[in-house]
Each structure stands twice: as C-alpha cells, then as structure tokens.
Amino acid sequence: MGMVALSGQLLEIVVTAHLGQVLGLATFEAAERIAGRLGATPTLDLIASLTADREVKAWAKQARRAIDARNHAIHTPWFEDPETHRLGVLERRPKVRQIYRSPVELEKTISLLQQAARAGLALVTIDVELPPGPE
Image 1 (cartoon, rainbow, N blue to C red):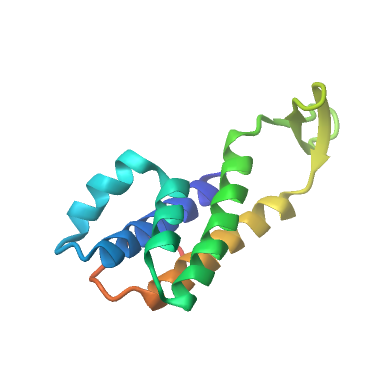
Image 2: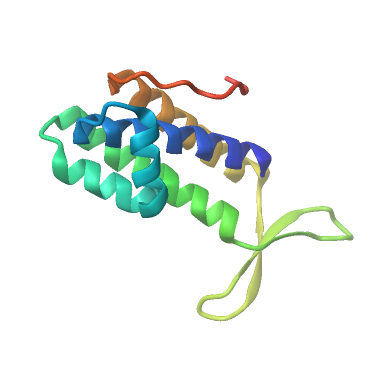
C-alpha cells in the first residue's frame, strides 16, 4: 500500500507541474496552491480542457485512469484472512461482501501510476523536483 501512496504522490506532482504549464504560471509553488484546492481529478480535467496539445490530452486520460486505480486501492478496505493469509477487499455495492484479491492487482496499480508519472514528466517543460524514491 505504501508504494501505491508513493507512486500516487509522484503522479500528483507531475499533474501539478502540468497545471502550472497550461496556466503559464511562473513557479511550481503557485500551481501547487491551485492543485491543492482542486484535487487530482479536477486538476486533470482542467488541464485537458485548457490544453490544445494532443499528447497532453492523451496523457491526462492515462493519468486519470491511474488516479482512479489509486483511489480504488487506497479507499477500499483491505483485509487479510487470518487462516489463509490471503488478501481481500470489502466491497460495499450492491451489498457488503468479501472479495479475495491478488497482490498483483496492487502491483498493476503501482505500474499504472509510475507509467503515467514518467509519461507526464516527459511532456512537462517547467522544472519539477521529484522527491527521492524507488524507480
């Protein structure tokens, strides 16, 4: 779960940099203040609506899918079966039920987030300082 959170944070930094770029802001900090008020998904929607760059629009869709996967992983209650040690989630719709999940699903979410962060970083032109972390 920690890698999901870290990878999501890295993507949010790249999203913020793109916001600064499309708004023509002078500093990352100014974009950070705006993105912090909006949240990742509305910020991506704003980027997609303001840019004319097709690559950035396509990246915004990719980043949106990754953020949605992150939100699902982070906000879904996880459990470990005490007898089998299998991982699962509690789904609440249409009714509460336990569904077993594979750790591979979390790895896929991490991969989506990291791919979107790398793709977005390749398109951004303002300076972005990423925190240290795994590649």
